[in-house]
Length: 453
Image (cartoon, rainbow, N blue to C red; front, side, top):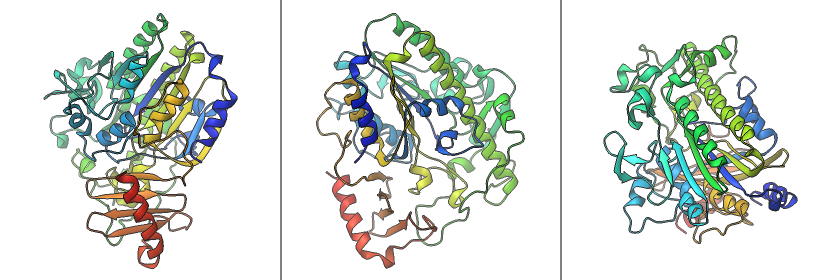
């Protein structure tokens, strides 16, 4: 049963134990489960690990799409949707925008809703050339206030791919794919997001109104830039080998890592240069530790403002990221590495729980409604509890996939299928669809019924 461990915990901890139940949703871009609490012992992530040590850690959480915009659409609406990055902007053009968004729903139920950083696809939630056009709102009626502090990066578009001290991406080929610069946390955009969120928490602490606050961090999104002190954490780190590092044979959703390859790489290719690959992996790790430190500052603010005992904290990664597995550097595939993302729900006065059931991002909206004791909207694709066998649906514009406890089926639009057995040592390196037609048929029916219900 989905989320059974979490809800046993909910029943054991009366919601009346706190005078009000706030929600703090922390969204992290391109964060795969590269964390200590997920068994990556070489990663320095003490603050996220602390959240997991007193909350529910979901070991098999899957996003709906391996791309930022569509994945966030699923989070913020609790529904499967358009596989494109503009899914929320397309929703905004409907009259009225539909389906209802999670922050709008909480707002109509008496919560003050605040967004800071990259929560929807565009940091700050606006469109236009530089993503700062107040006439182009990504999520109408959702937020009492939405902002993206841009500082020397001038505007949200500049901050999104910004490197140290205001460097803005113009041509990616001229911007280094990795960087570690001396300075404090504010020399990269996420430091400004943290400072703004801390200021907002102080204001919220003075109010008696319950709040739904979402804070979206940009790193470890490309380019891999973070203050040098976080890279220094890994000076003597020995990384484990990259699992299944070769390009898969046969037809798959493999791609040529185009988003990554367009950056300045000193003419090096991590698919053929193991030393360069390890450098990149360590810079990714530095970005994770940088964001972990930002989350630590938010937790410190909750503690000093006496908000911790009345706030449910959700940590969510918007999708996974290949660090060389299947010879991919990036997301956008339908392999496990693109779709498996961290999820932690930390409620006041609870203890550590491990949930090994398969869960989906669309489950978060109804789960938070349950925690906040407000009704959930009708027609959500997610559910806080599900008596059906656990399944996760994901998709791109080219194919869809369903993951159950044993198999992953990938169904291409022209009918071609991939089937992988996660109980075998081969996992997603051997397509067994030709020899398991009965499994393909069963999961194809499930995928079509779920995706189009």
